[in-house]
Image (cartoon, rainbow over all chains, first blue to last red; front, side, top):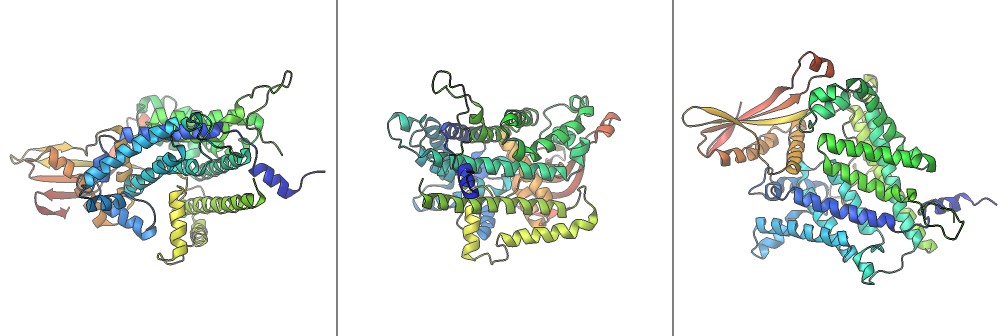
Length: 316
Length: 202
């Protein structure tokens, strides 16, 4: 007898899954935040303090306060620091150091759960306090950190596990958390592709051209980009097609490898050609965590048992 | 996993995906309502109406102090799902540039740019300039540019005047590039800043 709709939905949303994907997500997010902090080491004060800053932090936080007074922000910690006679600059520097330490702990998997919360809190605070400076990479990093924070940590490749601090996690719970990430990525790419498809520039190659030659993303000289001008329309259409159909083809076992490889290659290309390294790395991390473990052949269970995917989608 | 736990997870997932879907739809409809896409202009009102429906579905008709709206806002911001995913869409937008013209006491002038310590901050500065290019609050733009000009003051303490010129960078289309077309600069606004004197718009 065929299982009912409810059973099939349950099987899809709560598949048994190993925690390899969680290891990729933990390590990837930790390195991402680490590079974020290190990349801004010379400009941290400039971006986030009122006295030295480009834009008043207070202005960004006032706007944030109108929409969401509960969202974490640096101002909370600065106010607390002021009560303790600690200057704004010192508090902001301490937050930078704590963010780096917490992300290093997360990378090795020490106190994984607590560190995931700490990194999410400090990252979210800094991003929300610097509202005028935020771009796509920050949203995706918050998404990754949010999923990491609520996921069943620690994974078995963490230091916590080596120290025996891990607990048995239901594989269906692991599967559910990964499924949420997978569904979210599908919506991201679908909407990203659809919104590009509405612009004429993505069909005639103009958008690819403009993306590559507009400052500050013009790392490749315009004459080099022009030498490929005949391929630009095809490249634009390929990107639109790849993104819009991602939610379909990424689920098909035969197409998954190609779609995942292609999307990773596109992000790698964006990173190298446009200097958006952090944006490229966060998208690659999220994609690999969501779908890459499906592609790794698993050890045969017994002689002659053949190979099968670690995170295949069993019906049971 | 117990059936109760599964039901809780399912309820959360439905709500979470609902927010992602509606926020992304609102973003997309807002872009379409701005025009510059493949659809006929007659559809602009449809997109605007659609955007309003999506905003209503997100509870934005509620007052800002409404607890439900604040809780929703806290959740979507914490989960990073408060904005859509229409990067470089429907078309790649213009870049913006801020140039400082520094006047010295002897009457000579020189040009300078806002200064940051690394490329990561450079990208954030570009985002800030893009935001400045899109806002319509003149005072906010002026104050922000004034703050940005502080780095120029620091580098040129003897300057008698700093003129901040903000504009859009226009890149040539491929065909124009072939004919020798180069990047150009369209001034949007300019402000003069004097030591210890308020800014005067040009």
